[in-house]
Every structure is written in C-alpha cells, then in structure tokens.
Length: 105
Image 1 (cartoon, rainbow, N blue to C red):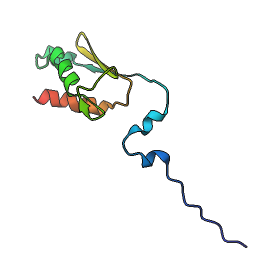
Image 2 (cartoon, one colour; image 1 turned 90 degrees about the vertical axis):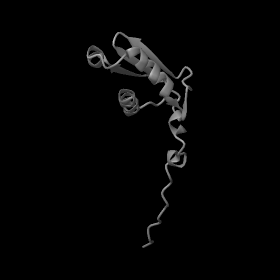
Image 3 (cartoon, rainbow, N blue to C red; image 1 turned 180 degrees about the horizontal axis):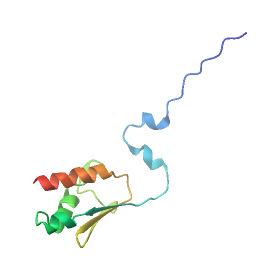
Image 4 (tube, one colour; image 1 turned 30 degrees about the vertical axis):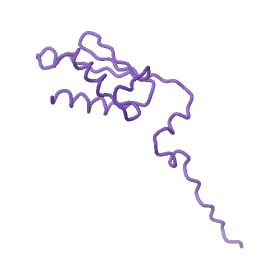
C-alpha cells in the first residue's frame, strides 16, 4: 500500500495580512451603533455630556490617527446619552477604555 501523502496546510489568507485590513474584503457597509448612557454620572454632577462628546471626538483613533474621523465615525449627543455610529470596525472595549480615561482626568 502507498504511504499517505501529507499536503502542507495552506495558510489562512488573512493571517498573512497582519495590518488589519483583511476585514475590508467584504463589500457590505454595516453601520455599528454604540450608546453610552451617562444619565447617572450626570445626575451625580460628576460628568458633562458635551465635554465627554468632545473628548471622544478628539481622542478616537481611526487607522491609528486621532482627528481622522472623516465620515466613518460620528458622535451624537441625545439628552444624557452619547451615540457613536461607525462604518468601520470598532470595539465596545475601545469605547470603555476612552470613557474610563475621560473619567480619570
């Protein structure tokens, strides 16, 4: 009997591309929406929604650069909530990180 032929595994195409642009291959434009509800800290007088929105807009990085939001990321203030809409990959953890950073200062 012949020995089984071992074919080397093909590497996943996205693994070679480590820059993070591998997700752009899908042509669908999905809009992600995050809502940061600031009602309680505003009522306690320890947070100002307008300055928080400005902080997010100035500190959020797109493709590694701040003030590079373009039309990809938008911030909107509705009462005591900040609504973040984005057409690019964006993590809730990043928003939490920025929120904690804002609360520390």
